[in-house]
Amino acid sequence: MPEEPAGIPLADILRAANELASSGLIKDYALGGALAAMRYVEPLATYDADIFFIPVTKDLSAGIHDIYKTLRARGCEVEGDHLLLKNFPVQFLPAHGLTEEAVQNANPIEYRGVRTKIFRAEHIIAIAASVRRAKDLARINLLLEQADIDRNLLETILKRYKLSLPKNENGNATQARS
Amino acid sequence: MRRRRARESFEEKIQKAGQLVRLAKEFPRQPPSPAAVAAAAAKEKRIIDAIRNRKVVEFSYNGQPRIVEPQTYGISNAGHPTLRGYQRTGGSVSGYTKGLRLFELTKISELRHTAERFAKAQPEHNPDDSAMSKVIISLPRPIEQ
Image (cartoon, rainbow over all chains, first blue to last red):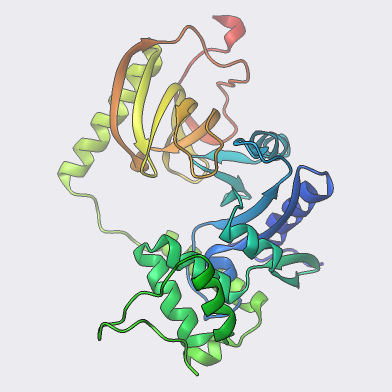
C-alpha cells in the first residue's frame, strides 16, 4: 500500500481503531462526524476524526483510560480532548443510545486496504439533529441536498429518538430531496 | 457540480479534504490586534509564573473547565505556543479526564491561578518534551526535585 497522502492519516486512524477492537479494548466502532459525512457529500474541511466505539464495560469510564494509555504507548499525544495521530486530532467517543445504534448499523467499507465501518447518512443526520450546533445544521442541509437518503429509515430514526429536522427559512421542516 | 463532487470516491474526497486542511493551516492570517497580543502575553506570563512557583491553574479549554498542574511551556512541533500539563479534573468530551496532555495557548481562556500548589512534576514528566520544538520553561524531572 503506498504511503498515505499528507493531510488526514485516515488509514492509520482506522488501523489503530481496528487494533483496539482486535485486542478487546473496545467491542466495535465506526467512523462518524464530518469524515463519515464526506462519504455522502462533497469534500469539506475538518480538523478532527470522530471514532465512536461500543465500550467493553458499561461503567462510566467506558474503558477510555485504557484506550488512551494504549495509544499513548504507541506514540500518540493527547491535546485537550483529542489524541494526535500523526499530528491529526482524533476523538474516541463512547457510543450510547443513538450513536450506539449508528455503530451497530454502520456500513462496512474498505479504505486504502483497511476494513472499517462508517455511519449511514441517516444516522449522521439524526445525530446532527440531536446536537444542533451551527455546523450540525449545515451538515444536515448538505446531506439532504447531496446524499441518497432512505427517507423511511430517517423518519423512523428521528421518531424513535424524538428528534426533528431543523426548519428552513419558510418555517417548514427541511426535507430530503426526492 | 456539487452533486458530481459528492459522487467522487471516498478516498479522493479524503485526499481533497486533506488539501483543504493544509490550505487552511497555511493560509496567511490577519495579524492579531494589539489587544489580542497583549492578552496572549499576559496568559503566557501567568503560565510561566505558575510553572516556576508550582501553582495549580484553572482555565477553560474547548468550552470545558479544567484544573491543571502545569509542567512545561514551549512551542509545539506544529509551531503553536503550548502548555503541557497534568489535568487533575475537568470536563472532557471523550471522558478521558485525568492525565498529561497538551493545551494550545490560543484555546486557553479564563486562565487563573488557584490557591493550591503542587509538590513536584508527574512521574512521567520529561523536560525534553518530544512534542515541543522549543521548551521555554519546564519543571525538573521528579527525581531531581
